Every structure is written in structure tokens, then in C-alpha cells.
Length: 323
Image (tube, rainbow, N blue to C red; front, top):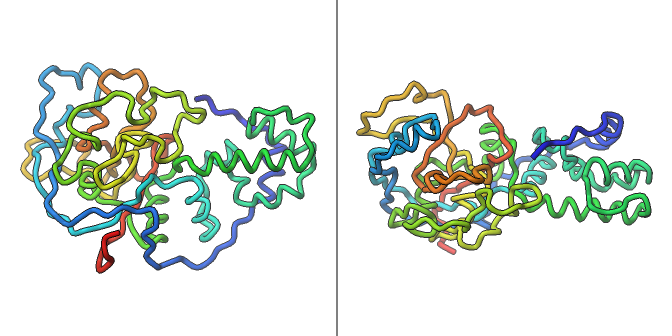
């Protein structure tokens, strides 16, 4: 989706309104909207092989399945993981609490104004009409709207964006967000266990691929990405949504080989961080199911950011009883 460049004069007047304050970090553990993953042994990785050479056919950056081998078991203590991908609204609360820099994409799409939405009252009707028509591109006739109507339309627009997963965040941004919440990014093993369940299913919903049950580009959402939790069937047995689609998700680990593999790669080491799960960016790809599997691994530099890459957090269960 092509991004529209917003007129610099209007952009400047909007940014003048934004001045985030810094407040104390919340160190308490809050398990609201998290799901419980039991202690136990979990199947990680895969012994599958690309016998048809489809990885080469699609110019994969690595041989299919190679870095998932060998399939093995890991023992994990109980933990909680976010039920949904972290949303724009949650990330905005974090920015307002800490003064952390917002994603650059928020400047481009105007969502940055939501940080100080109350100051829209200070903006003239003319500039509000420009915001509605040119920055937010809300489907209304702004020329005939009053100031209260314009502000209400903008707030409604923000409420819709609030529900989308936050994207265009680096690994460092995601790590800091989770730390402030009293948690951390999931390890690869935690993420995969939460996605595949106790039986190590290939997909969150089972072992058989099912077309259209996750957001991987088949459905035409206004922002490409869907509101978190929109796909009832893209849910693991623990109740974690969108683990096969919507946006890919950062995890904590460096990209490293599994013990016992013979596969070697110059990409292994403390160079790239792993992210997991498919995203909405795979429309039309007949091999898409390969990327929706719970064992699939991909990697990127920790300073990277993309429109289809987000995250979720985990917290240790400790002595907290299962919900």
C-alpha cells in the first residue's frame, strides 16, 4: 500500500501539539489479556525436508526446513503470553507513560496526533478539515463539517487504529515495551510452544493447513493488517490469537542453529534477531502455508522495522495461579 506524503506545513503544525511527558516505569505484573501456558515438554523444530526444491523456486534466503532441524523437545516452566499482538493503543499508552519515541509510520499516517488528541480543540476548523481529508483520509465530506464533527470523526478514526497491532518497531523498541510491562519478549521456544501447543501441531489450529483462517493477505482489510483477534480460528490451544498471520512477531533470541544440526549458515551468530509467524504480506503465494507453520524461523537485524512486523510479550507464571 503506497504511503501518502503529508504536506509539511500541516505536519509541522500538528507536531507542535505533541509533547510526551515521562513518568515512572510500572514494575508490577499484570496478567490482563494474557493466556497461560503450562509447564512441560514441548516439540520444537521440524524434521521435514524440501524434497521438491520449492525453496529455490521461490528464491528463499535459506533452504526450507534446514534451520528447523532437528525436531527436539525442550522443557519450559509455566509462563503467560499476550493473548493478542501488542496493539497501537497499548503502545501509545507506553509512549505516554515513558516518553519513548513513537514509530515513524505514526507521523506518516497521522496516528501520532492521538498522543495529544485533547489538543485538537486548539486547531482551527480549516486545519482540521485538512487533517481529515489529507492526513487521515477519512471517508467523509470534511468541507461541510463543524469543528465538533471533525474532532469526533478523527477520534473515531483513532479508535479504529487503536485495535491494529503496532508495527514499524525495532527489536529494541519491542524489548523496552515488554520490560516496562514487567515482562520480556518470548524466547523462540516459548513462542513456538504457545503456537503449537502440547502436541506440537504444525499450525495453531491443527496439523492440516486451512486456507483463509488467518490474515495472510487474502482478505482486503483497509489497512492490510487486521484488528487483533479478528480471526477466531487462528488461535492456539492456549488461546493466543494471530500466531499464523496478521503480523510477524519479534522474539528474544539471536538467530542460532539448533543443537544437533549439520546445517551451517553465515547468518548464524549474534547478528540477527529471530521473528516468528507469517503476516499479511504473503498474498498470492501458493506456498504460503510453509510460512504459517509454527516451526518456521526468519531473522532480521535488531534495528530493522517493517509494516508487517510487530510483537507480543511473555511473563513468568511464578506463583500466580492459572486463570
